[in-house]
Image 1 (cartoon, rainbow, N blue to C red):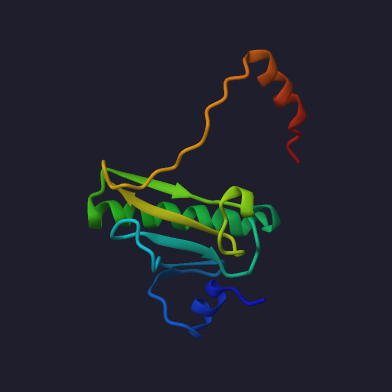
Image 2 (image 1 turned 60 degrees about the vertical axis):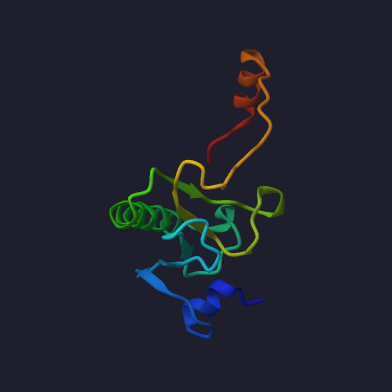
Length: 134
């Protein structure tokens, strides 16, 4: 299955690219949260962050960093949100690894809400022991 991002990259459908290197490309999100909202996507069609190689992940963050600085100069937002989601339960809507770079303003109506659970320090230690960095 070819994703919409692959179609934008190939020029099959229109998109407004603002950045491209050997591993990633960036383009204006058609659904702007605020003016200047950009998506950074890998050129290889990895479905999620979990599938990608280290080089592509690093390139995506490097590009997001450059783009965030450029957005700050161009739009002077009060903040910037970087959002990278994976799989349906993680809020991913396009099955192609990407990151949103979103200029933010107080009262802009955008929100990211989840329940806050406080299990206590012993439970946190238990959770931490389960995480094995590979």
